Length: 182
Ligand code: 5GP
Image (cartoon, rainbow, N blue to C red; front, top):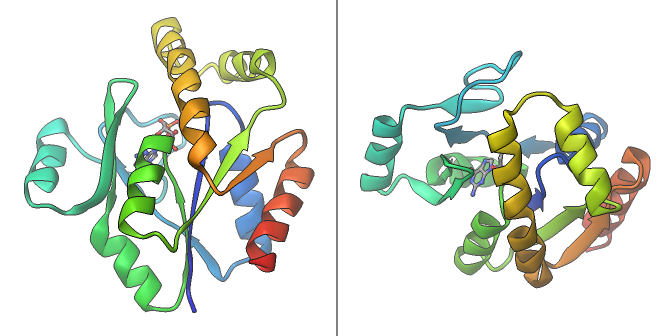
């Protein structure tokens, strides 16, 4: 039976790398593509990384009840389309949602069978260094993201599993253990 996994982690924790590494080893898992109102980063492609929407388009989707969950994060909106998740699961695919902790807890309420995995940094200092090293955000955006980290760690206490991202290989093996032992 197809299963839904929700993976969250603080900004800069490297969850994208961990998830991509996992997906390259397990092509039977699909990654959900979210909608967002944030600006495209270099190299990002509409329909692959995100569906990039204007605030107006996003609001229309909210009004039409098209989102399974949505959240405001660092001044931008992010949401998962209900239709995307349902059709993936119906087609028998295991699906991973990479969303923030608030969104993850909302999904758990709607779909209690979903497993929530939190990817944590080895330390907060390292996380801040990674966030700055990425050079993709302004200082103001970095400050906002740092402020949201505390809340995410608090929310993660309600998650099913916590994985420390000390190295990508370790984090991926731990996720494999979780998923294949369930
Ligand atoms: P980023 O701007 O770095 O791509 O993502 C910022 C945050 O938004 C990350 O924590 C990411 O997991 C989260 N996010 C991405 N898509 C969604 C979504 O569809 N719903 C929610 N709630 N959060 C999302």
